[in-house]
Image 1: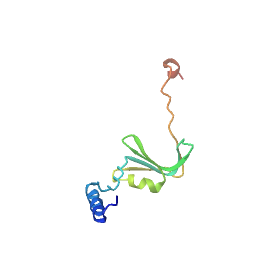
Image 2 (image 1 turned 180 degrees about the vertical axis):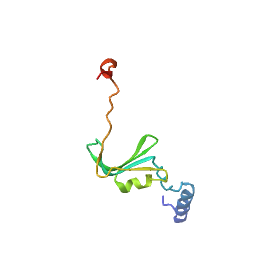
Image 3 (image 1 turned 90 degrees about the vertical axis):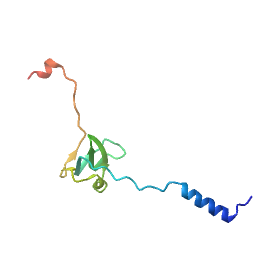
Image 4 (image 1 turned 180 degrees about the horizontal axis):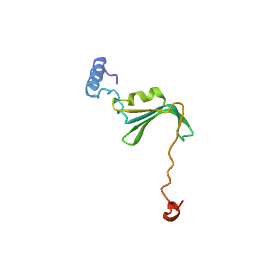
Amino acid sequence: MVMDVRAWVAAWFALALIAPAPQPPAPAPAADLVFRGGIVYTADPARPTARAVAVKDGRIVYVGDETGVQPFIGRSTRLMGIAGDMLLPGLHDAYVHLAPGGSD
């Protein structure tokens, strides 16, 4: 069964009218804090280093190069240049015995 060309075109346009139009990607949220200008150790074997990190509401929202972090920089973003240094994940010891922990 061969569909008539006019019927095919009409079906195509009808589908185009009901299909949602592709939306542009949402803009990146402005980060509260951006580190850039140095080496960021990621602890990811697939990509062990990066050049920039963006933080929003206490959560890391971007890790990558300095070009990619630009959409995360807004008017209220605090910029921290790490001037060629290395940014490392923090290690915190939350477990300590009271007696030895308070002694000199």
